[in-house]
Amino acid sequence: MKKHVALTLLVLTTLGVLKAHVEIERQDGAYFLSYQGKKHDVLGAFMNQTNAVLRQCGSVQVVDVNSPQAGEALRAIQNFSPPSSHDARLLGLLQQGPWLLAELEFSTLNPAVVLLTSSPQGARIVDGAIWSGTTAPWQSATLIRGYIQDRAPQAPPALMNCFDPAGALFN
Image 1 (tube, rainbow, N blue to C red):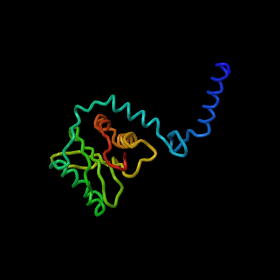
Image 2: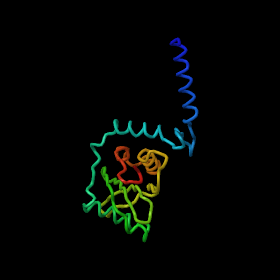
Image 3: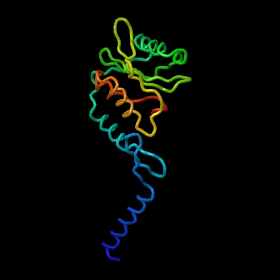
Image 4: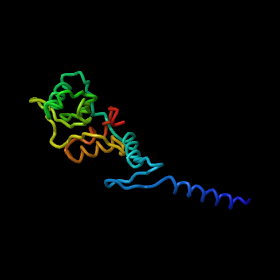
C-alpha cells in the first residue's frame, strides 16, 4: 500500500473514532469536551494552568487556621446563617491587606468559599461574595475565582488568583 493511501486511511479512521466518541457540548454558557459521556472543562483547565504560571502571590499570605485572625473570620462565618453554619470548619485562609478569602466545610451545608474584609471592629463577609456548592463539570478554582471576582470587583485580583481549593469536593 502506498504511503499517501495509508496516511489518508489513518486520518479518516482517527476522525471517525473522534466523531463517534468525542463531542463538544454547551452548558450554561460554557463549552465542554464530552468523551464517553463525561464532560471535561478543557478551557477551565487551560485557564487554571495559565493562572498557576502567571500569578503573583508575593503579597498574599497564607493565614494559619489556628490563629486569632482565622478564629475571627470563622466566627463571622459561623454567625452568618445560624444554626447550620455553627459547625463550619476552616480549611484554608488567604489574606492580602484587609481582604480575607476563606474555604470552609460544614456537616450539613455545602462547602463554601467566602470573601471577607478585616478591620479593627472585626471580620465582615462581603455581600454576595460567597461560593457554595459543587462545581462539576467546571474546573473548581477557575469557576470560584471568577464568581467571587464578579461579585466583588474591588477585591485584589492577586488574592483571587492565588486561591487553590483544598476541599475534597472542589478537587
